[in-house]
Amino acid sequence: MSDIDNKTSTDSGIQIEKEDLNRELKSRHIQMIALGAAIGVGLFYGSGSVIGAAGPSALFGYVFVGIAIFIIMRCLGEMSVQEPVSGGYISFTSRYIHPFFAWYMIWTGIIVTLMVAGAEFIAVGDYLRVWWPDCPIWVGPAVMIVIILVINISVVKAYGELEFWLSLIKVVAIIAMILVGLMIIIFGVGNGGEPVGISNIWKHGGMFPNGVGGWVSSLMFIVFAFSGTEFVANAAGEAADPAKTIRSAINQVTLRILIFYIGAIFVILSIFPWNEIGTFGSPFVAVFSQVGIPFAGDILNIVCISAVLSMLNSVMYSSSRQWFNMSLQGEAPKALSKKSKNNIPIGGVLLLLAVDVTGIIITLILVYTDTPDPFATFTSVSVFNMMATWVFILIAHLNFRKKYTKEGRLDDIKFKAPGYPILNYVALAQLVFIGVTMCMNPGTRIGMIIGPILMTVAYILYRTVWVRFKAKNQAIAEAASQQKQEADKQ
Image (tube, rainbow, N blue to C red; front, side):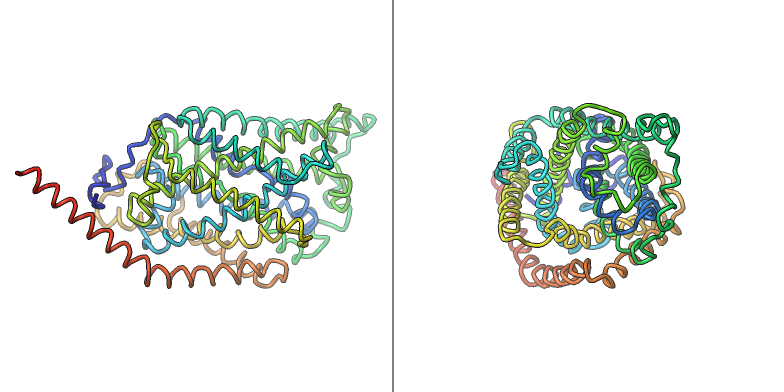
């Protein structure tokens, strides 16, 4: 089948991939898919690292990165509403920048998924050991992989429904923690009726107790925490009403993520001195315990495990759709465009299953060889690719808008991003700043070294191997299509 056979047109006449997936996801499903990907160990497990590095200035870090996320998501939302495909930013990068960068993201995405899965699996092992100290570290991840596989081979509506409830668990937990924290801060609940206030934010060394350098070093962990927000675009290909649901999801998800992260960190920093956070376990547990909620640790452990399951579930869903879309574009093996009887991209799901299993193996190797701080290692290696993805989204949007303007179809755009093109460049400058600071920090430098090396190797492979392989397959497909046409004429 040729690339032309894999194309269809939008209402505006734009040629996009003909995916023929079931459009059964509603706005609430898509919002929770995005929240499920963006709220995981980055908040429940990684916030301690951010506060430990930056102190109270962590709040400014979340705001700083959050501004960039808002701009990126609105740019992505404009393209997704106009051209709704499950490939999301991968498809837009291929169409509006160059196929190589999409090819680079999709293939190196395997490495990023390995890193993210590894970080999540380490967290799961820690959570389960609260209840069963002697539990082998591989048991939790293995059970999760089976659950995720079953979910992702079901009909997409069932996946959306389950992801909705999984994400709702952690959303309710965060909101409850913020409300309980505000009761402690304002009314002194659990503190003998003495309001705690917010003076802890500046009393212990000021807002920048570790200097600007401490704040800068926290940005990498914040980027990691916000990663996955862009996955909302991958649901566009299965959205019941893309123009309505994607627009609503983009607006609401970005705001909610910022409120959840900034609100939670604000409450934690207000109640406890920043330099004590992390010395008494999870700050979430400490907040609930402060007001006498029984079994606070067990409750939060359940929340954290469901958060990890939700996050990994969202990654498998989104990544499998990206592989499916790239296969239709001819930039990935045709086997990945195979669909199940439920119209699920089964090829991509099975590939991600293999990646997750490999993630477990790598995790076991790192843990049993006593590798120092494997969570930080996973994080630093994957952050470069995460930021590269955001850069590609911003550049793709610049070219997307230029194309529509040049063709006189600017009024066709249904969900315009504000501040174009100034805000695009503002967000790009923010990402460049974070990249430069990572290069300057010995603890995060490894990601900025390995990332460009991977991109260079990927480009060499793309030019010397993949382009030829793709051309050969295209010639075979065209020959087969021509033979079929001749046979039909006879």
